[in-house]
Amino acid sequence: DADVTQTPRNRITKTGKRIMLECSQTKGHDRMYWYRQDPGLGLRLIYYSFDVKDINKGEISDGYSVSRQAQAKFSLSLESAIPNQTALYFCATRTGPTYNEQFFGPGTRLTVL
Amino acid sequence: DQQVKQNSPSLSVQEGRISILNCDYTNSMFDYFLWYKKYPAEGPTFLISISSIKDKNEDGRFTVFLNKSAKHLSLHIVPSQPGDSAVYFCAASWTGKLIFGQGTELSVKP
Image (tube, rainbow over the protein chains, first blue to last red):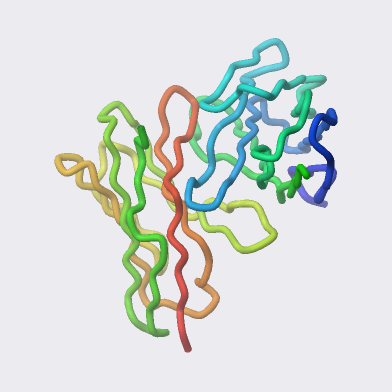
């Protein structure tokens, strides 16, 4: 089984709908991250969490919210989806301050019509 | 303002030759640099990293070089193989976060 899983893998929705993307990990890592990938822009950080009680905005948090329900679960919500939120979304985890490597999930392809 | 830049969107190399992927950064506070590889329909996977206090790190066919004075790092793949064809992202670490470049798509032709 994969260490970092994301659901759904693909989603098509309409403008104005509320969408939740879920991330679960079995690595036992404290730190979790949400990124979006757009062509030509690389991966940009949306939100991150260093533990269950810690939530921080990233580079592009407007229009998004997150919930850290447990150490293993970190959800990303689009309160009212708009077409320019069409992108690939990745969740990642990291063990702690000593190691810099982040482990990524397989991604969710979101299309907002 | 893009703090980490990969100025070449694509690179094509013949199998067996060297692939050199480049990355420039602007923030001298970055303490670690990483390279990730991404295949279509998959998440990025970690490839190799280097601390800001080093100038070279090697792992098999992959070597990363860091030139702090020029704020430049590069990834060398020798010899290149068709299975290396993927998008490569460089990333810089700072305050527990990673800042990614735009990516370079490497195509290794048989």
